Length: 319
Image (cartoon, rainbow, N blue to C red; front, side, top):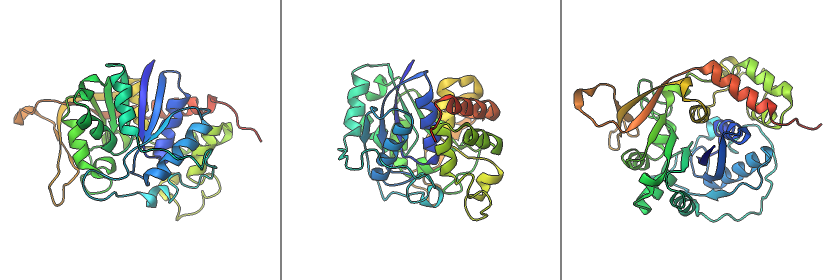
């Protein structure tokens, strides 16, 4: 059983990944840490509480982290996830009066350093919290078991600029710190996330299962009430539910669902048009020392089937 801290900015796709991780017996989830990204950090923290409650894990520690990048201003994605971060899902905050101290970085450090080589960081968000942990604790990078991060694009285009993915673009300086840290790293980027979605049939199965997690995910994209509205998330109705963070969980569960190459990755910090790009050396002409396991191909059908099975098997909603 792999011990995990999941660093997250929920986010509809984060919700899918968190539901799967929380419904799996393959992981011992130590805590959720939150960070700005899809939405501001306070909303992300409230959403983490909601997700944990639906998963039957209201006891799970939730630690609030960075509210802004190391340099510059945050770039939120409310146009995709809506102002509340979780689409059309309406679920009450189980503890709306909670006052959460912004101590995620210190707690992340303490957890990893108390058990060197045992705790994995699964980063579904901008890498600010992880970078701060690496800078504050010199032994953090060599003590973490591994860091699986969602972000980057090697052989595909970006989703916030022509070349940059959202999580890297939101804090390129933090991403560069993490990627050059020497920690064991896996990049789960747009090369695999772009090829993955829950098909309309999978979404229908989640809805008909009446499982709490399945219903929540469907409600986030307005299923079924808004299925005929051409202005609300139209691509999700024709292509299925895009959940970019889910392949992180899939890789931790079964790396055989992916093609992996150990390559040199750097982050562009200064380019006028390329800031936030992950520059991946696909051949050895430039003699870059490999520092990241980069995922390329994904068995999307197997991953979608496994996610759907896990969520539909986890409890049944009451009427």
